[in-house]
Length: 122
Image 1 (tube, helix red, strand yellow):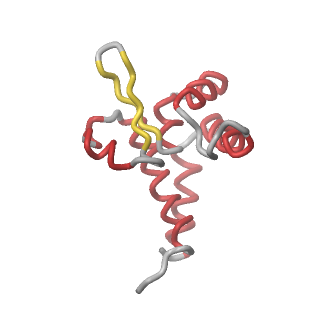
Image 2 (image 1 turned 120 degrees about the horizontal axis):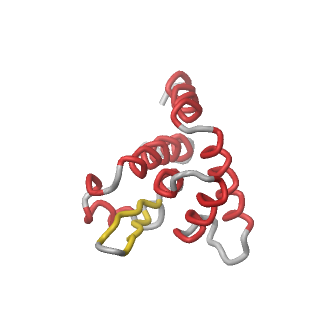
């Protein structure tokens, strides 16, 4: 990625996600990083709790941290695309809702930026 593309991703984050969602995202990531029972990534219950507190859609917030919800009957199943991306792909990425996929698109784009410096070409 180029610096221009990096900036477009950052600009997109501000344009696509409202203040409350961005605040919830930062707070959720900070909480997960500092919580002693966490592996550094939020869990579905954490996403739901922060989404309620900030008044944002849980699906969109979950997508921002790689957690995609899908309703199956009365239950909501969460695919953990950060820890086990193959699960969501087996379920079919197109089966997740629009809000979740908007958040997940930003997760993937930002993850690519994060990983870029650690990648080695052989």
